[in-house]
Image (tube, rainbow, N blue to C red; front, side):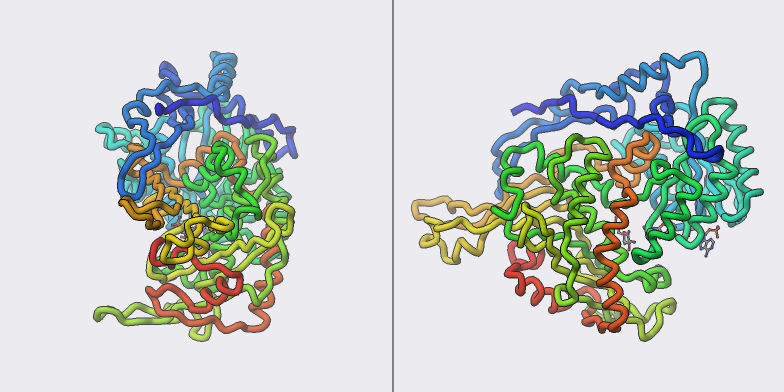
Length: 588
Ligand SMILES: NC(=O)C1=CN([C@@H]2O[C@H](COP(=O)(O)OP(=O)(O)OC[C@H]3O[C@@H](n4cnc5c(N)ncnc54)[C@H](OP(=O)(O)O)[C@@H]3O)[C@@H](O)[C@H]2O)C=CC1
Ligand SMILES: O=C1O[C@H](COP(=O)(O)O)[C@@H](O)[C@H](O)[C@H]1O
């Protein structure tokens, strides 16, 4: 079967929003993008080459059911999404009048996230031809640094991973020449005025669009937004702000943050990032479900017995203990990353792929969720352990963590969606640090086949070896479906095998980092993968009472050794709901 391209493309375009105040500029993304002149559209950013590919399915033993060669994939005609064509037309129509530019300011540029994720993602976008022809990147922080020092710092974390093209070193040099640094306080209008002046110099009279990425601790978000919007927002184009989590630590603090941000920004200027939504396999979740006839009809209580959202890391909170102790694993992972995936998984079919249509459906799921009962939650904290002569620290061994901290580093919970589609189906979540492995996955366990004819041919009851669809978000991205199969031979013996789509075997292209996708979306004004304020309110409304109860009752976490599979209580929780954790079964 050959691959095919479709006209599936970015269906959203940013409407022209009216000015909010004299300080806030209208969102004019449709006239904001200018692509490199003289390039074939097909050679532009991979984003403009979005296509849907029918995948081959490889059995566990390597046999191929259907296969389209990677050569076919590479040579397949590309459809040019209407949005790209539209942008080109818009640019042509303003050609000769006023060219546009994007200025990206990384606020907190000296920090960990900026170095680790934001600058490398911006470079990857530049390398892929996804940034507009004219752009400038500014690092902003209190640390004293020259442009050269910033470039030196940034260059250490840039990699030439994409397609291993030969001119990477050159591209890196070109990219670094577009990076500058401005030293300033986060609450100083004067310092942001100085930044504005420098930005203007680089913008050179072009129609200016400005993106601020707040990569700073949350207690200074509002100061920075106030100064950026008052003293450094664009006067001719759009101004957008990417806000990093945590968005508060409960309903009240989150609402207060939203209210403060909205004093200076319109909701459509605020891009609340949840980087799990930018992960390839999470993005693929809706494609899998809505573009394959075989899944959507099964996507309900009628066929699905339970769904599991599992996050585990094989390292502790070392180095981030100060931050983590104030939040804990439920706020750090469950209330945002896992809940967002759950909402995408469980939503009804949206009217379209438009950001508002999708976010409307997600918020309905969140608001249909049953309050979480403390009896349906297990919390844990890792303790020191020695293995093979190596001693691994316990959570409270971190100097920045109080010795008597009860903060959970592990949690498992059973959640329910009280609507017609999901009535009674347990949605299990499990998240933990310092466990035996690093992984993130979604597991869909189907019901048993009623009156299975083959039960008598199987040594174990087939009612227990049900179908399971696994979406492995990371590492080794892939999707596999566990099926019962006849073992070849003259007899009739059954076993469970995987229909397996391993991305690294199927696609030659490297998977982009989540931050690349999300930064590009923010530049393009695509809000689909960012959290709207009502989604955030609904997420906090679900978790705040539980967190309050855990904290007020000073619930003691179950201790588990560093590098283990987590507290035993998680098994009892699953068993209570007639479920087994898929990641812990012998045959994963
Ligand atoms: N690091 C990560 O992996 C992740 C981080 N995040 C979120 O992203 C944001 C940035 O994270 P990260 O880079 O790790 O944060 P950092 O702690 O490294 O802080 C970033 C920068 O902010 C400035 N800063 C730090 N503390 C203060 C303070 N108390 N007052 C004023 N300025 C301060 C420092 O710059 P200077 O002193 O030069 O001004 C620092 O370099 C945070 O909101 C975090 O929660 C979210 C997901 C993952
Ligand atoms: O948001 C967070 O995510 C990271 C895990 O992200 P990943 O992309 O590396 O899986 C987690 O370590 C951190 O505690 C949390 O704040």
